[in-house]
Image 1 (tube, rainbow, N blue to C red):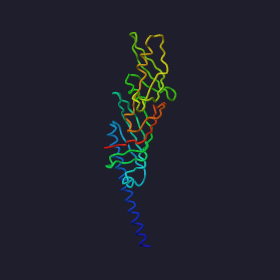
Image 2: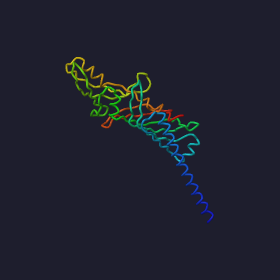
Image 3: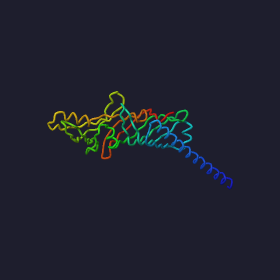
Image 4: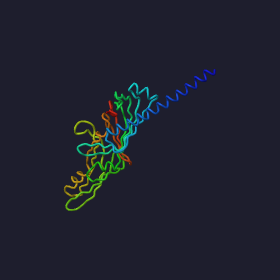
Amino acid sequence: MRFLRVVVIIAVILGGLFVGADRWAVGYAENRLAERIQARQGLAGTAEVDIHGFPFLTQALSHDLDQVDLTLKGVEATADGRKTRLTRLDASFHGVELNGDYSGGTARRAEGTAFVSYADLTEASQTGVTVAYGGQPGKVKVTARVEILGKSLTRSVVSTVTLADAPSGKGKIVRVRADEVPGEGIPGLERLVRKQTDFDRSVDGGLPAGLQLSALTSDEAGVHLSLTGTDVVLAGS
């Protein structure tokens, strides 16, 4: 019995050491992967990584992780010289095949959400307008100032925010279009207002390669995007 007790104690100690080593290894891997993702995405904000599954070491040795969760803050997408900032991005990557040098990996599938605040959407317009909630899902209020006939006029319109196919035929863009612009009998007023309030912006450039926009809605907080993808690049050397 004393021998069995000693064996059990040794097993518990070794088990504890293994668990401790495994948790240290997963923490180190999460930090390193977050750094590589942050560098790859050119983030001004932060990246947080959570690797699921136990034990981690056996997953790492097989170069195959069950699930990796990623949170990005401050992602900037640039297209045609115009920047659009994603306030926050949360994504889950499933079946991540690690690179040979463990510098990153590719997920068989991924899904997630992205959030764009009205402050960031206002900045993305790059026309001096202010964007706010439009009172119902999928609607935003856009306020613009225009100069016409020597006068400065401020007009607010309710606009629909949708996903549309990018002109290049690849990926999606966020499209904002005024539902209606009262002309008030002033020639050219609607054209001037729409020149300010209607805009398209691409955000695909700020997403991990392979992750694409699939749906969009808006509420009091901002614009919410749904993301899906296959063969998504999580990071790389």
